[in-house]
Length: 166
Image (cartoon, rainbow, N blue to C red):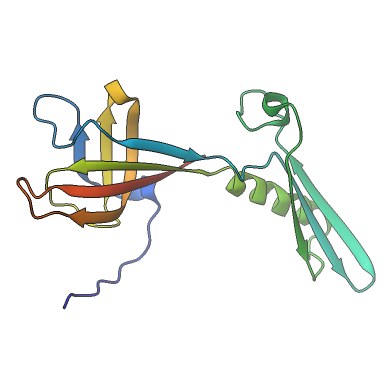
């Protein structure tokens, strides 16, 4: 029926690479793949409103860095996300601003999803793999999120790989 394996979570950057998919004459993957980046929910301004006991603290963070692709300078407008909390922060205004900066940084972590086909190789879901497909402009370290095995020649596997770009 299967076996459940529990292991401590590690960030993708801290995981060892289980397999390297590389372009070339001995490539183990098909060239036809999709590469998606979901940037629809990325904000460049975060507001945190803390309300409680008749007082209110508002923390704000802005991304105004011209080198950031999501900044107000690059986008040309503010894209705001708001968060509300029912308890006042212990550290007051500095803590509210720090929380807003943390949420802004976390909110700008864009998910990159690559869907590809490859012959069977010994990797499992949650393993870290590298993909170097320069011709298709897909390069990086990814986490294997799903696998579907077909019992055809080469035991073709449809895999979804994910990474988080910050």
